[in-house]
Length: 488
Ligand SMILES: C[S@@+](CC[C@H](N)C(=O)[O-])C[C@H]1O[C@@H](n2cnc3c(N)ncnc32)[C@H](O)[C@@H]1O
Image (tube, helix red, strand yellow):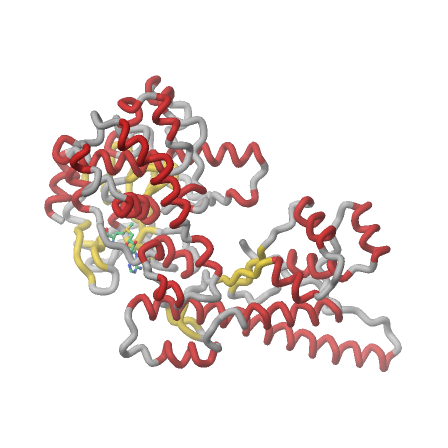
């Protein structure tokens, strides 16, 4: 740690050594801690923009030349190769002291064995690891360049350093430690940099379209922006892809851990540097926490290798936990015959092919709308098409029955029943960290499904009672009304 801090301050980084230090803490590993009481608004450290490691700052793109650089595509292969190359240069690299400080072992899902991944069965996170896509990139884009450019990649290092394993390690460093750093508004990019940069950078290659660890905030601006390629139109998507050129490793800023609800410092940018600033008073001895955007535990585990095991009113987990339901499950549960035309129309109209349930236990409006679309009579289906509008997300008698089956089907995808999982989680003794983390994820997902089902049944009961009352009074009958829209 002293090696890293020495490198950081000797290469232009500045740090208030009376306020912040690095320490090993059993629960969170290497962590930033307050060495004295820190006031809100205090600057803890600053990183000059020239110290960021990215495809804009590494020399590799210009040494490779435009054609070969472009052959790496617009995903993460370029940045990963830059990091491998910089590391292979040893002390010649500007970032030698930084790269030496980085982890080589990860608890993230990319590094779990098949048996360990089996503990997550039922969770949709298993479809998002992206290991095969990264291996394809390595074999088809990176390896040919490594073999061709022996002037840049020493052949003696091909089987020891420029390996697939190291490719995964560097990719995981990016996944768990990078920030999106936009150029200062109005600042011209260096001409040669501009020339060498790929037209578009596609985050989906290695990261599965990830929101990166930190959006950096303009100093004084408190707004936080999330990137979600899924909801953008083409033009917006291109803009976001361009932003991924801004993916940067930010020395020292990536030493901060995060825990949902604990954030007390944030990274801001000025024209010349990035600054970590306390956003709350921090008492001496306390950990200094950044935010990773509070993703659900399934995503924390996939990208960072840990979970937020917080005590919640009905179990252990994170308030950000979610469970996803594929549209296929909805279609199966609706048991209708001629569904394909309706599903195609739903997707064409911009409907989602997966729905997200969260800890509010409300039904996602769009799932209800799809269910009602599937259940429409032929006449109403034709009307919906001519209006260009899917049905309102109303929970009527028929859709209630389908929703129930959807939730039950989704629950059946977990190999171990909820009660058994909870009991196993309570008896933590003898469980490995990975086993426990997997259990926390799958138990929380099942809990959301159970609680949503319970809430739905209570709603139904209330609405039946209300309807009985109305019938006695001779009033018109109505369903329990639309559910709230689920947060994505
Ligand atoms: C940006 S780095 C933070 C610094 C890191 N601890 C280090 O040693 O360099 C992110 C990694 O820190 C660890 N981490 C962050 N927050 C954590 C937490 N709340 N609990 C456990 N580990 C955490 C995870 O291994 C994660 O991949």
